[in-house]
Image 1 (cartoon, protein in one colour):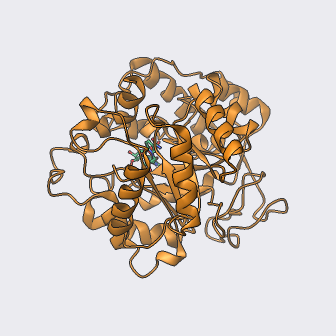
Image 2: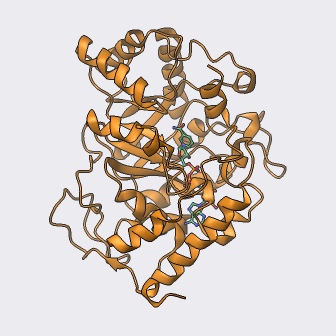
Length: 379
Ligand SMILES: NC(=O)c1ccc[n+]([C@@H]2O[C@H](COP(=O)([O-])OP(=O)(O)OC[C@H]3O[C@@H](n4cnc5c(N)ncnc54)[C@H](OP(=O)(O)O)[C@@H]3O)[C@@H](O)[C@H]2O)c1
């Protein structure tokens, strides 16, 4: 083993002088929550959200329905006050697992989150999404009309009812809809802000060209711009860099939120990689290739050498990427949220970043056949 690789990782001091605070430094964890050393929008006003967001795509499966309230409470106790859901999360057929109640009787992620937030809604930042197909059409389509005014307005009302609230802090166009005029979609989100039903809107999974077109419509119409672009981004999945998505977000000053920041578990250490349901398999896709697993093992060894967990290291890497304002982590275990928080305190030097860069994971990504990919590829 190369001795150079063994040096322990440095951490920020438990005080941040450069940024706004999310809260006081936590003596138990010993880190400053403001972290990241760059402009991070916080959740205290309309267009802002904190850097650590709890994803809820698998609510009802992992965690199981009965365990959701404790996870949400635990997140809040750890200062994680931002939650990400969608009208399509949790109780779709492809999320089914043998030991979990079927999607036919499982509550949706929005319902479970809404129940867990009863009485404390005002203390959190709540985001949901519209634009993924629902039920059987997730496999066969049609993938049209998912961002029309009628569909957005109808689905928002359903989401609000399931979440038990009268407004969202952030409402996303989950996927681009090439069959609906962009000005209709943009005007609808803008009108919902004016009506007070949502405080801000965001986009997700837009290509660089689609972001350009959208921002052209925004600027021509005088509508409010999207507050964030939620993109699939991790050390193992970097196509947003190669395809110009990150550049477009920076060009238009749209903060990015990285979803699947651990590549669905690939970057979460050896134990996670070996689980039966990991990565895209959790929602109907395939598993990881041998090549990806080999690189993930080398990644985990680097984390060991540097005295941090692989998941903390993966998130710390993302926090350093230009334009990334935060990450949407998915977990059913509170201890993993502690890991995520520790990541905000990790410093990486240029040499360490170069070693991580050199891992360059294969771009073929077998198993990417979830609803998002089907919808994007069948246009
Ligand atoms: N906009 C979109 O199109 C889109 C698409 C996909 C996802 N998302 C959002 O992003 C969220 C997160 O996505 P994701 O679940 O793929 O994210 P992820 O954080 O990359 O992966 C989560 C997986 O990693 C495991 N894990 C997390 N922390 C760990 C740790 N410290 N140690 C070991 N294992 C760990 C979790 O298992 P445990 O449950 O055991 O912790 C879970 O299986 C979703 O819930 C959703 O809100 C958005």
